[in-house]
Length: 552
Image (cartoon, rainbow, N blue to C red):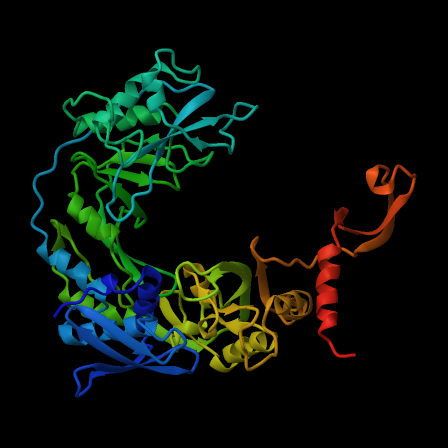
């Protein structure tokens, strides 16, 4: 019986569960005599939870000993591992296996058409901009329209570049002054070529006649004319112009090594630099964003091949040999090299520190969908070893980096990491997964600690909002002195200013009905920090509320 996990778990729970499965947190999963599945899943912090899962008529009934208790991420992780065990597939990661199957099924490539380019005059000061949209997993070639303006000196675009619906230009009998005759010719041609649409999701070339689509040389000429305007960008940034190039590189397949030692399949030029390839309408374009150039290849590369390369998963160092033995010799008629096998070494990190991000996310005051929401201060803890960031939930996985062609594994200090987490808990922070009165939202579930009033912590008496206030003013400066990197996001509700506060008594006349017209005055406190007046009333109120609960 096949059960689709995405039909029984929300996206956030399933993602966390699959992440637990990939990181090896599932200790065991096996069938019980009564037909259920019994499993044990660790939380990455030294604690394990037991699960009992019943699969009945396409339904999943998964009980768990964790605070969630029912169809949680631990149940999803156990079912993911159970499905992998039943499949009998080789020991490659699931994304790698699926990608490998698509490569094997690809048929030989047909003969490609020829392509060439064409020029067009430059644009004017106020301008319509054509921006190449991100490729995504489909390696698509799509153009969005933006509106921009060059700076006062007339030397470059300013930073104010905004999306603009250029369909208004074609509908308006008197186009705006920044529209050039070239735009009135280019926009209909881009729409007919299926390279531009006015409103994504509502069909290409809306309102235009269904004419033959340009292909081959016609597409290359069209993109060349775009470049000639000086208003074709690879990103919505002032310095992202693309210029047409007549170079015709011969792309080859190569494996690009990442900083953590993993590698991905890419197209590369003769110099080994990766090539961003897009293939609309039977013509393959190459983009070099760093050099600001675009051109087309002598031979087109099939969409299926581009998509396979674009969707190439990261290959872990320990998977390189197994994948190399299983790959075919060619991919769409291009030689397919084996993944690289690099030397490996292991050592301790030369520099390490804890990175703590302070923010706030929402949770429900109960598990029902319509329970009230509350925003709570949260902490995200990461550990950085020689520039490589890891988190506590990564389990025993050690970070990697590449040095002089050698994959170096950095030994983690789990005792130090546990001490860092314990320091936060003793300062009032509660692990998100240990909350019992609140139900974390998707964003909060990605965080590590929370300050939630009313929750019970074994380390402190009160882990609520005032605990976060005390943490901000007492613990954060101490953490920074001890070498922690503390990042305060805009959502974090408390700020500790480096400027000295100035407290003064301010008076102000207040005539009117409240004072029966007498020339009396009001008296109050005024605080100034960094040259700005600050309302001290909330601070005094918080102080009085805390003092009311203290003995004596």
